[in-house]
Length: 428
Ligand code: PLP
Image (cartoon, rainbow, N blue to C red; front, side, top):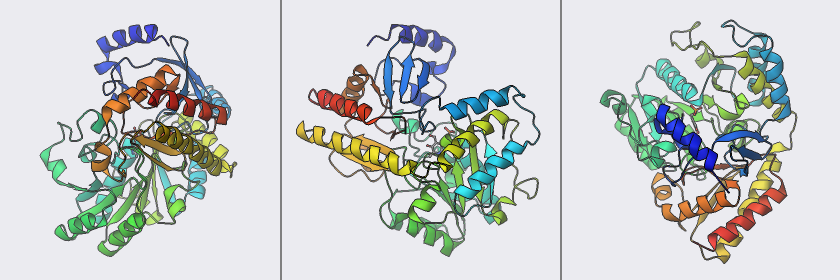
């Protein structure tokens, strides 16, 4: 495949955009080479500026669960755009999507819409701090909750890929209020709570981690966090930016029957437009301005185009009760196929999957937390990434990211992918 035009466009972009990209995860710094510039996408495929077609396993890092350019979303956005793009005043649409989201997700009474997952998590933490009147938070190494200051402490996703899990620019004052725990390690969390009695406002967790590869919670981990929070007056935040409306209709709370106090959303809830949201029971949400003292706002929050896209997406998911099962079956099929060919080619690997999330790690040890994820062999990953790209398959340009399976992927696409992995892994 040729990437001549992408290379030219990247060279132009580098002159006026830092690193040529508006989000570091899009750069190919970890794997080498030039980012691919996209012209369009439809269903399971990306079409780049050089005329190549790629099977897409990133899907805009999660939102496009039904495939690219999903017709009801596109139509809803076109219709709304004709009526004006932003008002800064309430619209009926905001109540419609809020009501639908509240009906789909357990244990939430009210939801507020923002513009990104970062904003959702940042606002949720402020709300938890205001509500509990405590300052400290616990987060897990390798979990990513967006790029607001409190979270860039051993953060996952691009922050690990680019070697900046602790970003300069975060003040020591902010960093000291973020306590760091090991994912899947309850004893570690217990010790932190003991050492900071009555000071911790919230534990924020990706209830299925997706930013150090895909790492499902060990049995009892989320239940344990719930109990520790209840026993110690701590609010439990589930960051479901990645998992919400993806792993089940009601997210991980429904999947594992565990109640969170505040839930954050992003990605799927916006249907591909810039949307985030956070939600909780009424008592907590009423602590927000204008009813309560915790301030949070946004010029474009609840934007009509974004709400139209999100509503069309949630309606499609709500109306298709078989969707999550179907996605899980496709993921299991792909995982079984990859397992078979990598074993046949004597590759040391681990595959983690849950629902429509999957990651392949080039290390045979179980990958259960940041430390074990970080042990993966990056040289093999680079060969894997570039080998697949040559075959017309696009996965994230980092070993620390999850692949997203969409409804648009056919079993032929999955078979093609398995054959490509067989071919590529013969040359490791
Ligand atoms: N939380 C999780 C779990 C995420 O995966 C991400 C983004 O990847 C975020 C928060 C931040 O969302 P955004 O990139 O929309 O700011």
